[in-house]
Length: 213
Image (cartoon, rainbow, N blue to C red; front, side, top):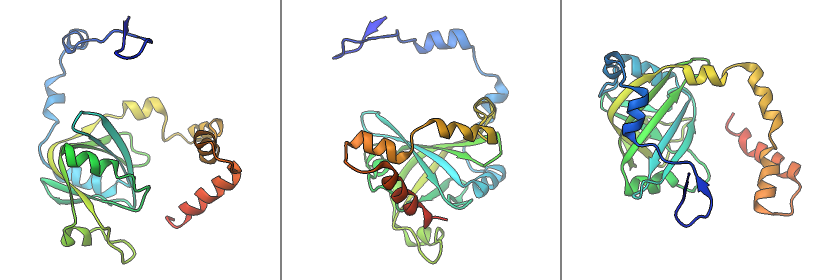
């Protein structure tokens, strides 16, 4: 056991990549071969049907952030086999992903389709754009986004469904887990220390979501 710098708490020891490889072994050649460098027909179709993606970025120091993104199926647009674009929809205005990309252009996307076990992973370099032609392709209800993130593709591959099977994410019975967690309103009141009725705050949050449906 080791102690972290600036912290008296004890942490488990770090395992080196050499030790990890010694324990796990090397991936099969077939697994290595599935990693492509462009968006092929199958990846294009998957992206066109995906309403949700997780966007991973990091700053210049390597501090990581993962941001959920969702909209109508196909909200991420394949511009060509080497580039995809993701619209910036109205949100909390923290702009964490934008700030990270200004320092480090590495980005990763994980696409999901409801009910499907397999996922699609896409990695590359990214930047923010306001190119009108790109934004126009993401117009919804006669409104185009102000900005978009363009990812220049370096790696694309399908990921097996073991994680989703183990998590039972698409199992309807799993939705009962939400009843065991405080509401967003209750958590916000406790974390921010504000004198507001949690139920009132929860109703405001729900009202804010309604325009999305």
